[in-house]
Length: 106
Image (cartoon, rainbow, N blue to C red; front, top):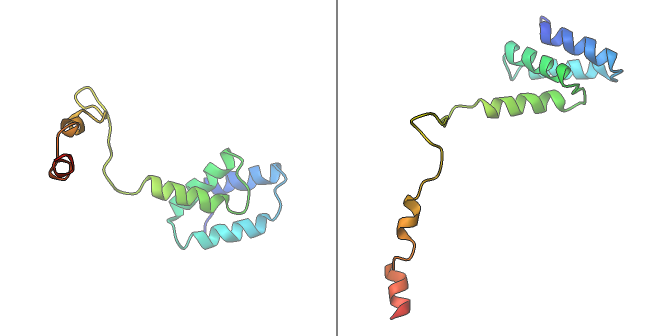
């Protein structure tokens, strides 16, 4: 595995912070490289370094969160011609009797 800029920053910042078990944590990073792309891993290492996240599960947590946050799915975004408010369509049935409530009332 070739170290990218994120890994270099992580190593420098972790050493400056007095992080223990750096070899173990880098070994975990190598294991995570089997599950994620080198770019994702390097980004996560850089992200962890910038935010001083050097605990044992931090890198996996960052990768997991990033993967779930960027997972496919509809992206909703408000704009000049589109609102993200719920609207009032759901209020149409408010107070209207349904067959089940009509039988209870009768």
